[in-house]
Length: 276
Length: 236
Picture 1 (cartoon, rainbow over the protein chains, first blue to last red):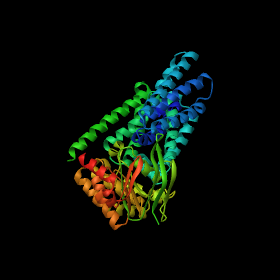
Picture 2 (picture 1 turned 135 degrees about the vertical axis):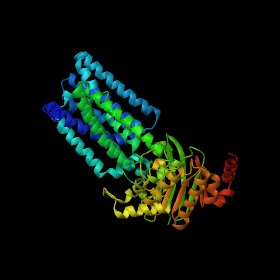
Picture 3 (picture 1 turned 180 degrees about the vertical axis):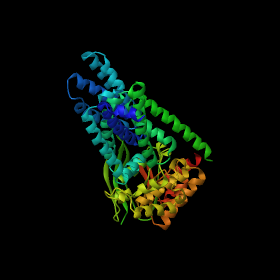
Picture 4 (picture 1 turned 60 degrees about the horizontal axis):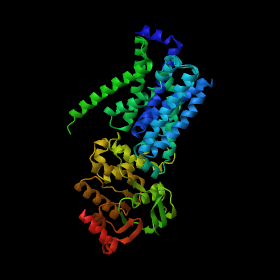
């Protein structure tokens, strides 16, 4: 076992994937708790599609992928947030409209320039080889920002997530927190999508929070459990994909699904034991 | 001096004027019920007082050193909140956030304040429990405790008994009346329960497109708007 791990870590690309993956899993789980509870899960999904589109366009024009994609996705995050906040059915449909359009634009760009090849497959479903040293640096910065947000603004974040109108009334700038969440989510999605795949990155945001909520009934435990769970599932998924030569992103999602089912079962048993 | 003064206030919602030139004022210890049909601008008025909604005209002034962020607010509950994983204590504590400045964590003083509010409303025993496992009446009392943490002088309640059973409703009205009488907390409550409104409140504001009535509960009963509305209410 130890030898196998040593072998795994002897590949620099694996070490990079591990570092970026662990940090991105941590961030996406923390941000995911707020997003899922605020009913913004679709934003994560929408952002990954926008990310895919702008990544494809950036590559086609020979531009630096991260420098183009991150600002575009952050802008998209603000836009999607506004649409969701409007609280109408229209907003919900508009998110789907934007994300599929961005996806189509990306696919078209790729098919015109390089043709439908392995590149598309890599973008869509992720590649473990995609992580560079600059990704490692950026993911360290990102996770530092997310951890600071959760450590020092935890109570305000809780208040904004639980009841936005009340927290606005008591003078908390809820809009600023929403923008901050959207920006950090955008960066997380862009960083994670090339490894997890544009199709699968939103699962990193949604799964851990939902899984933790099967069992935990208070906010802090939900935050802590989902962060831990996300990192553990990522490491197991990465190990499995290496051992079995399966697609990385899909393996990680599969492990997350397994954890979700397991926690659902534990939650159901716990509920039955506890007399009403 | 009045605690709250509205002068010629107009409010617009979706480009429709819902409140037009409304003027009234509340003094310390008043208990105002705002009644009126759906869409008559009751919630908009509360939001405007809290600064969550821009005024289309007029002014809203607070007196006696009351700051806007120090009004206790009990918003309408959303379906999203009912199954939110939150502990009772953390919810009540979040009512203290308006007195924290930039400080990131609660001090003993705020924890003490939250404990007092919970005891006052009889939810101290369930402070470690999960919010979504409480009954509707208990949930409203938790949210009232949170609002109480935020204020010393004024509570704004937006249909607080909606969805509560008759027993929980009566209990909630009793708690509000007690806070009003014993602690001199000024109450502004939106209500659909017109019969309860005229018995509990000292003042009634009847909104229906234009303000039809503002005055004491006794005078409202004798006014034309009041008689019509009371009759309709008892038929429903």
